[in-house]
Length: 149
Picture 1 (cartoon, rainbow, N blue to C red):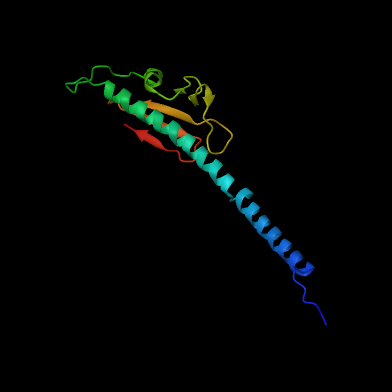
Picture 2 (picture 1 turned 45 degrees about the vertical axis):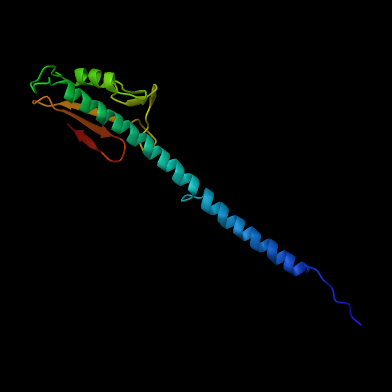
């Protein structure tokens, strides 16, 4: 009589290993690929860094614009030109942000904040209007966003 054998056949073991290798390959592709988790996380970190720099400058521009007026609503400390505006904005900037007066690049702790195209720093153009309004226009961040105050 034949004995009944218990155990895993070699064919079943090979099929199981092949299925596990396929699953591992798909998982690695989802994590490491061009649209993977790491790529998306790095992209989100870059966008956050750019947005934080722009928001810090916008807030400082608003503070400088507000500081130009006295409690009575009359103009008391007008900012005359771009250089004076940048000086005043740099006094108000927080979190290590500064605008380089020469290159107009936004820096954080002395290091330029690089735009989303990874080749050059985000620059800001400050325009002081005839009514002493200050406008900050950003470039090299793929939004060409401006902040009017």
